[in-house]
Image 1 (cartoon, rainbow, N blue to C red):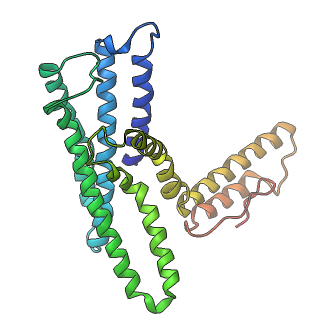
Image 2 (image 1 turned 120 degrees about the horizontal axis):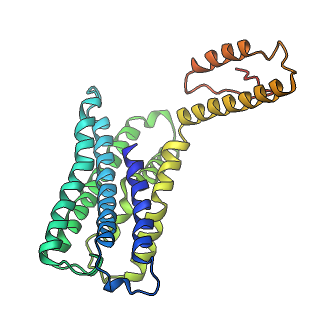
Image 3 (image 1 turned 180 degrees about the horizontal axis):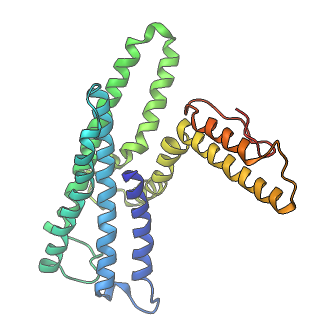
Length: 279
């Protein structure tokens, strides 16, 4: 949930920054130096930092689940939340103070140098590096688990499962950022723009698609909600025309809903027909 919030914040920050900096087309935004534009750029930098830190927290959380099988993950949640939002806040506080005292020029979106540059770039590179190491370690654990199950299937099936797991983890860990992470900003600028902006723009959508909307439990909840909406529309329609029959009475619907709530997420519900959910 916090990872998705960080993706949403990053998207909002991009639109907010552009709206503030380019609100007046007659003015050169490079010459602007207002509190509003500085706040917009600071919010943009914070959202970028928060997203990188929550990608790191997601990697640490996944590795915790793999290594500490018998330890409840709930005891780590508070630390995860504190780190995921606290660390970017502390970094941004230091960056804003440094900007004010050392490089208080324009809207703070110009080229940075020295300490100002590394206050933000340093933590981002650190999160990318740690996440890449965790990604390699998770793949190593998956390979070990698949080798221990080799008797249950062919080598090709295990290879397919490993490849699928690896591809699923790449957007979750943000592994594509490692490609240009440690190169100078001027190196492969055009390729960097296509890869980082292209993949980075769709990263949140891909993660949501793979880990949220493709999840069986989420799909089950969506189906139940859809059935509720459809039956409510049916009730409104029949009540309006005065043709509500005994078979489709609210009492039967409440009974069906109670059965629906008891379903396991792994069980499937059939399509709602005529306002009645058959299980």
